[in-house]
Length: 638
Image 1: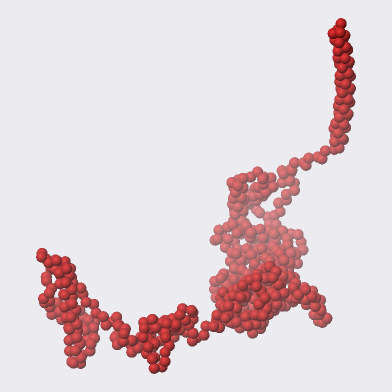
Image 2: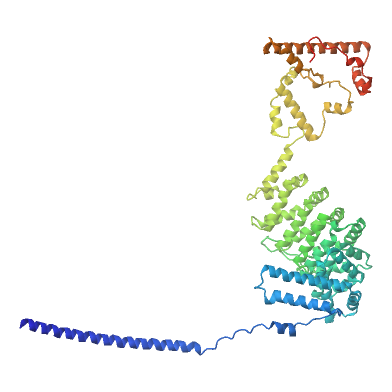
């Protein structure tokens, strides 16, 4: 009964637990369903939000065919009669549009090169066809002369001329020369004079480009036209635009002037003298005038303290009308002239103080202009000409350079490197006048410069030059040789040369001195003054020395004599004794023969070199008995 009651109580409690667990599960299910419903509503709202905003439209695909059909316009400044040439021009344009616009990313290198080659060959065919047409170029230049410069057609004609000359670069040499000769014959340079005379920068650039193409083909034709033109209008306009035009035109004209002034491309001396004479007589003054006008009345650079401005009304505004890039190009052109023109630029610089005027530009605040001024001084020093060196020393032209260098301090910039390179060049090339001038005048200024050893080495070079006096040995080796000689009293003067070491030391010192000053001793002078047949020894030869000319050649024992000693019963030692005895006897016989011959010749009054005179004669006049002399007793037949 107790067990039944206990089992019943356990069942009731289990049922209660089961009901409690079921109730908890129901609550969890309801809460989860509610959470899922809330999340679904939020997701739905999130999905509905972007759907309400409009998406950006995609860009329309490019209409290449419509562009080529409607927008591209083919202008013929001069009508082209041949339809095949027009077809080539259209094909070349479409290939270029395909290569550069439609398929720039999809083309590989091989396909890109193929398309470029097709365009090149098409352009060559077009240019050759236009050159072969006799009426085309005539009509082109006629329209260039008649058209007003203000009309749009004028710009198209000049652009066509520029493109024609640009495409002519791809022709062969003979074909290109024939084309430019035809253009010059039709009046190319007269047309270019009118083109450069306009005020539009675009036309000026086109005209400068055509002149560059002409110079690359044949510079002599342009130089001849510039010299022979009556008023030199084209040359005057080129120099004027170089000084006054914008930076782009000026850069192109700078290259143009360098090509025209390059003496290496001048074939004939008449052309060189006439063209350069015209340039230095009429146009260099304009370049120097622009440099003088570019000096601005303002505090020097790197000073840090502004100075008082000028109140002189004649000076006008303190600002300079000449821009800095114009001055830099002008200085570079002067550097080119100084390096390639020998006497013309040299005398012009010395007469007009050009270096001093250029160095005055160091007062400007533009650092690259200051560096350009130092480069011009470096170009003059680099010529290593005594005229320039004396001019620089006389006018003290290193003063503004050293002033700017010290004001710059130890700042590592291009100005610092340019001045250091200039000083190092003077030291390396050992320009003695400039080394002495820089050290003596500016040693107190660069004594504090310790971050580089340029000035220290320059001073060392100066001290070495001063220490090398003409009476001292040039190096330490000579001083060591001097120490080998023991100086004694006047009574023992002969003991100085008692040893071989002392004699060798004295000779080495004398030879070193002669090498330094270029002089010769008495023996060398006697050698050049005496004749070739004079065999008398020099008077200052020491008794202990033996002249090599007095030695005679004494033949040794022949192989036959050696073999004769190797008889049976005779040992090797005995054979050697026999050979030495034979050699000694031969030497004595030779000495007796020589002594007797000399004595006989002296007594008879004959010259000693009579035998030499006989040797110089006919070989057939020799004594026949010389070949029939009997062999000596110790000689055995082979």
